[in-house]
Image (cartoon, rainbow, N blue to C red):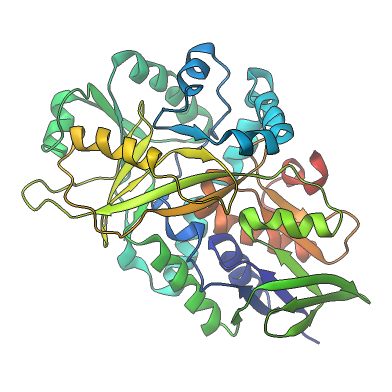
Length: 413
């Protein structure tokens, strides 16, 4: 008899898990309150980041802390009430960002990143989504030689240890590639391996369409209950009740509520990001995805226009929009590149589900047979969705996994 699996959450991670489980012969139902790819996966920068072998650490140097504390920086903003609420998780985040711990976790994190292109490629080909993909990497811009030199020191090590490929561009070489940029950029790193996506939401939709083609079921409903029932699970939604042998929790930042209901305490917190689209300047086309490294925002030439994505705002998932970070990023971006008019009526917002040690949870829930977790991917859920689906499928079928899964266990905190 075919085993029934319900996957909760239809972002990049959930859709990828469903895709891989269908490939393994499971009967899969994917449930989300919105259509696939319409939450956090919709609004990201659209990069499959093969170079991102170092996760975002909590700043520990005094210079950065003093810069961030006034709450006017472009890259990091915070809401005091949210910081207080997440204080325990943030203190753990600070702890794991020490040099001692960070050196240990980078290879564990990189082990996932290094599989990102191959696992996406398999799904892109199956879904026929090649038209959404550009394989030209992206540019990381630097305003000071000191910052560029510091990044190159790390990059040289990443190249040796993790196979990261890059070129260094001086001011003149950068001007040849992006003639519309204004000073004071001193140079750039061209990350050669990453793939960029002209419509991130459409890629998730293509993967979801492939899930349906492979026999999966997609239901639009809100989860209202999740309880053990016999040897399986009862899943209650606003529309119906379902029974499943196994359940995969892939609800991103919304996972913590339901895990709490089951007595599973995880230090999950959210980093919000915003985006806005701008009209393309026909006289000054943007040729590459550009990250303004020392300021903390990204410009991406997408189908919907030039997308500006912000850094991180420490807040709760459902907090109202605060445009100040986006406005600050836009002001700096306009001094670098001639953005056109705003195209969106209001900013988009999305919550990145983060854990203190910067690694996702992938594996079985403790003391909850048949419940599996795939959440906490931080800034890289879009990049790591397919590899998460592949590895979780191997775990569910009790196969030897491609990498050691101990670093991503749910009960590590």
